[in-house]
Length: 245
Image (tube, rainbow, N blue to C red; front, side, top):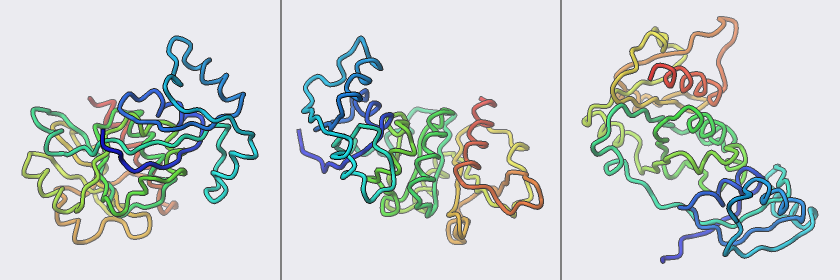
C-alpha cells in the first residue's frame, strides 16, 4: 500500500467518523481515558480501535495539538491519511439526477466545513473545489464538518472553469447563486443533473467563471439584510432541492 501524506484532526465527531470510515486510514489516535470509554459506548458492537496505535494523554497534553487552531479537541486527536482522489469523469458515468455543489474561491475552513455538513445531511452527491484553495488538512474544517467529511464525495480539481465546461458538455445545468439575480431558486424545476455554484463571500462568483453558468439564481431574503453567510445559504438550497427529489 502506498503511503499517502498524513495530518492531524481533532474533535469527537471528526475522529469517530474517521474511525468508522473503512476507506480512511487512521494511523494513530490520541485519547484521554474518558474519550476511550466514549468510543466504546458509541460503537458497542464493533471495536473501532482494533489494529490502531493508541496513545493515552492528558487533556493538557492534547491541547498542544490544537494550540494554533482555536478549536476544542474534546479528548480526541487522530493522525489520518488522505482518502483516494475521486475523479468526476469516473463518478458521473452511468449516473443521472446528480446534484453537485461547486465552490469558486471559498477558502474559509469553518464555512467549508459547515457547508460539507449540510451537503452530507441533505444528500448532495458531491462537492467540487479547486485543489489549490481547499484547506484539505485543516483541523478547523474537519471539526466544523463534525464527521460529515467522511460521508461526502469531494472532487478536488485543478481548474473550476474547465470542470464546469466539461460538466455542461455532459448535460449538467450550472446554476450560479448571486444576490443580484432576478430569479428565486425555488422557481426552478430541479430535475436532471445540476451544479450549484457559490462564489467567495467577498466577491461572489468571478466574472470569468460566470460565463460557464447557464442560469443566475438567488435566495429571497429580507430587503434590509445584505446577504446570508455562504454555509447558511447552501443549507437552505440543499434542503429545498432534497425535498424536491
